[in-house]
Image (cartoon, rainbow, N blue to C red; front, side, top):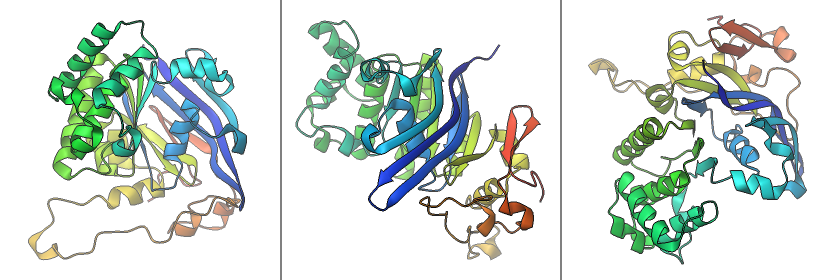
Length: 324
C-alpha cells in the first residue's frame, strides 16, 4: 500500500515587501508518495521554488507569513522550532539547488563541505567522514581526489554532482531537486538526471523534481503537479497528463514541447507559445488566474474554480476540466 512521504495542505506564503504584500502561494495542496519522482512544473515565477523553501523553512520568517500545514512524519514542519527543523533539513529532507557555484563555498574544498554536511547530522569521526566522502564522490561519478579541489576548479556538471553527493550524504528520505539542470548543457543535463533517477532507485528516495521544462517531467517523473500563479492547477500521473491533460494551462505547456519528428517542410514553423504573462501577485485575480490567457475563458471564469477530483489520482482546478 502506498504511503505519503510529505503532505502539503492549503499552504500559503506571503512576502512582506516595501512595495506591498506578494501573495506568492495560495492554498497549495501537494502529496508526495514514498518512492516516487514527482514533478512540479510551471513557468518561472509561479511559486515552485518558494514551495520548496517553505517546506524546508528557508524563508525569512521576519518578513514572511506562512499558512496551512506541511506534514512530515506526523509533524507540521511549519510550526517546528528552528532547532528541530534544522535536525530534519539536510538529514531527512535534503535539497539540490539550481546554482551549485553559488551554493558551495569558494573558500573550502568540496570534500570538506560534504564532510561538514555529515558532521552536522551523523555521529562519525574524521577518518570515517573522509572515507564516506570518497565513496559518495565515486557514487556520483567523480574521482575521490575531486574532494581536494575547490568549486571554481570544477565544471558546472561536476559542481552539480558534488551537490548531489552532499544532498544524499545523510541518507535522506526526501530529495528536493530545484531546477538541477538549469545551467547545464543538454548532454550534461541528461547525465545529471540519469544519475538522480539511478540514485532514487538505489536508495529508495522520494524525489520532488522542480522544473519549468515539461519535457523533463515526461521523461523522468511518475506523477506531476502543474503550478500557475502560486496555485496547483492540475495533478496526475505523467502518462495521463500527456494523453489527456484536463487544464488548458497544462495543455499549453505540453504543446510548447519541441517535437523531434517535425516534417521536412515544417522545419521553419514557429513553436507554439502561451501569449501573455502570469499575473503580478501583489494583487491576485479574484477569479481563475489563467483566464486572461485562456482561449476558452468566459464569464464563469471570473470566479475562482474549485478543485475537481477526476479519479485515479487526478485532480484539476478549472471550471471546464478536460474541455478541449
